[in-house]
Image 1: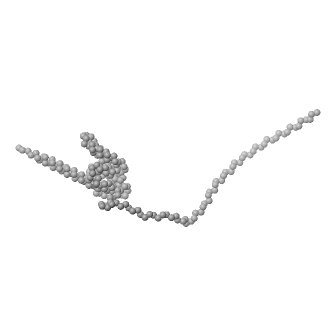
Image 2: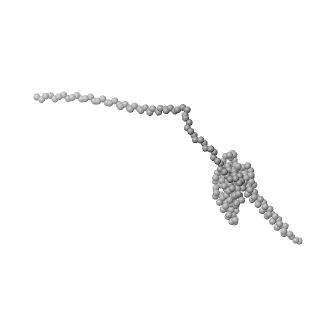
Image 3: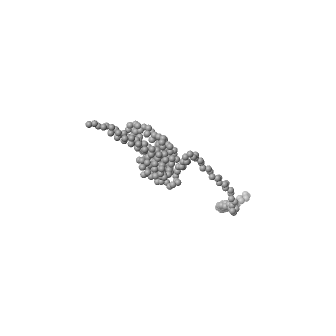
Length: 227
């Protein structure tokens, strides 16, 4: 009896090839969706194809502080350490949860959309990039949106659309200056109003009557003559 060991090896190689194709396809979808999403937010879309710089722009897209990017970069570079790498990957996932909540809030979406963005970023970035979602920066800096209600159209910050390809940006020309205001004469001249009279001064208090002078004592009689 003879055994053929090439069948198992061929199946494993085919499985690896299929896995590589799937991973490449997902990476391409992420790049395309992230490119369109960054462009819609006024950020450089070509940053989606540059490693680590794309993470930096995703942090800016979520309106999170810059130290989020440095933490994610440090965790990515140290993820090869045994056992510690798993903890660092969990830290990256936690940061991504906060960023996804903010990104969904900036596009006027709730917590359900943020959950799908956390689990399926390659698909949800395609929805954000090619859908009718408008970018409105409503997530406060340093705090997650946590399913904030969508803002009305035209409210908040809306990124300006990029200029057409091959056309330089031309700033808008200011309109004509308004003519200076000239003073208009009054229809009826103002008459000066008399000033209010000063308040009357109170009369000084009347002094009390003087006490009567005591009566004068009678003069003593002259002494008798001396004999």
